[in-house]
Length: 418
Image (cartoon, rainbow, N blue to C red):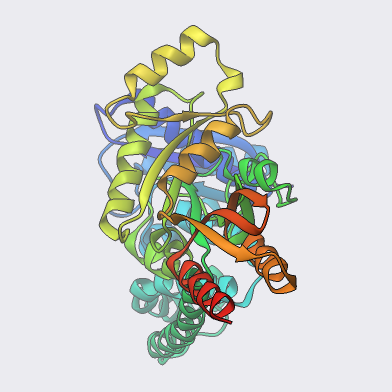
């Protein structure tokens, strides 16, 4: 694995726990990208215009690069083109920031055409504000390899804008196709449920266990980039459950916009299962819940949010009770589960079933005939048959959407009218 050094500039007087969480997140991202962290440098300082950290820290960083044989430096803080250039000149190795690192991970995870387009769009949106400075630096230093851009051209900025426009148009077509599919699913009576939450909260493990699937689950961030949808049985009623890309701290608007169609899988559902890692520090949980609610409430269209506290098997009962109490105002009625063991799944299914759009319940009377038996078979496929009695007539206690009930009433009238 390629050796890297991590750098994080913290605000003077900042919260130490938050700073520690940010560094941990950066380490996890580096691990997810396949890097080996061989050194870390931290500094509490207001941002330096030329280097982000102080000049003295950059000299210290250059020495550490030489001693550790590091091939790349990764900053938690977002870097300007000038800062990347200046640091790379002093340290003689590649320099990136957290957002470029995320894009690297996305690029390796992208498997569908839509995901690949989204990754390319995010990269271009990231590069666009830097384009003029990049070309200026390339001309000034005659270094066509700087930042891996190849030979520079005066049209570089316009080329980026043109490509962004083309990708957005292509993604609009993909979005229309997905919205048509979503409408088709609703028309067929499927309710839509999405898993949401921060990376590493256990969404994919939950998805796999509850629908008996084999979606990639690894101890790293962003293992889910392209949403996966499967059918989930809720006591006889089938819904469509989707595993989605995880949230992450401090994502800039351009990255959120680039992955808008992926996030639409969350925003346009009937029920959102907001998965939270209960083993994290309560202050971190509260912050993530607050941020998740902010993201979701701005965009959702009438969906119900069910908070799912995961990994309860990893904390003691007293510790669990205390943590639940501390986050209660953000998660007043959580469902407690272990995605790993399956604990709490009955409660989760029951609560999900309670939140999906209601079907009507009615009694249906069918003739004891081939037509009647055919109708019963159809009702088992299209609704929930709570009970069925066979006598002179077939009496069915049925729960189904309006369309099915209307059709069976028409069927009743036609058959009994004969």
